[in-house]
Image (cartoon, rainbow, N blue to C red; front, side, top):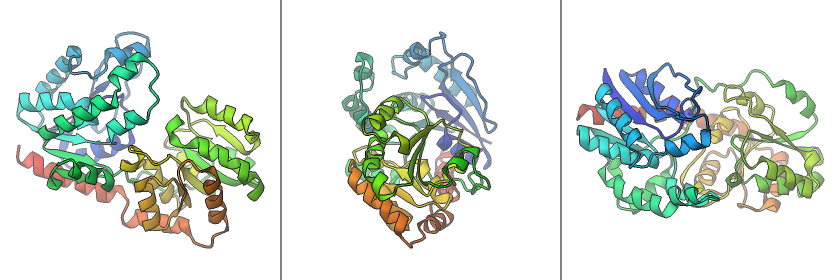
Length: 393
């Protein structure tokens, strides 16, 4: 059995992408040790397919623990723990998830002389650029310019880079990274775990007479949900039985609720708590249209969310922004429509078009995930990469 050491900045579980990768590797003869953070002393869940080693929380204050456990290369407590974990696990491959853990990955690579994978869940510098940083600490430790310099420098020391979209692959090639060093392993849906729902949630009864738009996931300011709420000003006339359901939690919820009040559309939008990933397909199944309104920018143009393929797996029409990967996949699969980013009027027009269309967008999307955009295909790309790297170690 070949050992793998994965490095992750955040807590685990849950993490959809990591769970799929770890399970795939474990089922194909690899032993995975995951080194990750702990921000709450009582939070230490298990995942049956790997051993988890945590940099433990030192205080009862979650915010303070995030600072103390921040993966700066001069965090010697984290570095010592990572080195000790590597000595114990004796990996043939080191797998760093996202840019914050890459410096540790490079140090461990040179210390152990093992292969290093850089798994880019997203274009991290562009993600930092899109966030609204308010505190001095955030401006220092989450500075996108510094992150960009780190990425450009450290990526030269990795043996392989994993990306989730063709657009990010092309970005790296333009920046001088050899194409044969880049592997595309996307955020596609695992149809064996995320099957089609066979029941509806109890709450669905109150929406039986509505034309339901659903957004599921984290509610942060950069998800484009303001545009969806603003579009209700037009939709309340063109689709009188419209109902927007925002299913999830996040820091932008209070402002969205205030926006709905200000625009006098609060009767057309409901905010529902996150039911858990295992139940979200039931909520998706009660929708008429599923939404990904995150606007086009340097970040959204180089990544793709899991929810796109999860929506498609439930055979639901989809409305996305014109972010490059979303627009490309929607046009290719004919699984829905796209609207011009931050344009509530165009959003409304596309909803009406989806409502009145005779095109079976849902079936098109389901067919696309069955044939192409599924984890069975992407898993093989991951396994091929590991066979290549571990065979050379």
